[in-house]
Length: 423
Image (cartoon, rainbow, N blue to C red; front, side):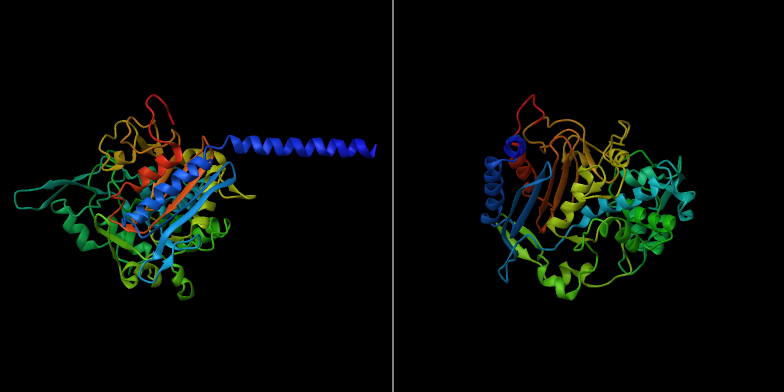
């Protein structure tokens, strides 16, 4: 009997090992892909177009790739590594959207509710209608109120450019991006600037997600910084994701670099580049401002690929994640600024959502159904629910990705474009 039990146990163990090996054999990211990623990332460092870069990928709950190349601080020869802290800029936005959607799940609002229902500052908004012969701004009434859905998909109409005659001057005068004001004053100033276009008619990046943070604050009655900490960052144990980096941790922060030409980098002074994160300003924006590490942001990405749950902690319900990862831009929204540069994508709730495979080798690679976003310092993350892949790429480079780092990284992961295939 004892021998029979031992044999049975051996069969079970062998079967489990075979199942595990079979799963590993089916992984998209294998040794060949890892070599390809290494070669791609290291080539950017060797060319002098970036100082340092790191990347982390998980597939089917396995870490399938990590590596770091070059320097976080080139002047002081501090290598880029897994614990390097970077400024994630707009990769803050999906975290803010997640915080907002926890309130949605509680029934505190509906996506098509008017913003002014919760933030009266935004009632009876006026819309820019050009300038008259004297250069005075002309205004018309909004066709409909700005909705919360407009905030989550960037169709609210908030101006965000310096070249709109008359309107850009009003925006500059109100200065709603000042670090020295809180979210309440920020919202008041945004509401005092006319909308650039009628709500829901165009896609245009702006302060929509900063207003989402204000909305979280208004609806919950809790300061946004505290709410996102309690409902997203702490539950996921994202201990290195924060606005303010204490002095004891600043040696881990990557320096920032400005590319001035092929193979030419200027390292920016930390006092300038890190200003927002080494001084405790009143502003706690939803659209930018957080710092993070590879592993911290990967926890967030893995929560999303697991439909709202990570290691036993549920942040969102599966149907909410599905809603966030669904394209909310109708075909009628044809003016989409630079969004088409991301590929054949629409926009969900604080994510771009791929709606069709690449049409050519020049288009950004990706899987239909993936959702992703990036940051001003050329950081990137994506969630590929088809292959259960989550990827985080960290670098600190301005201007934003002129070297096609993102495209070449995704080509290294998925392989180059193949006509008539969805990769």
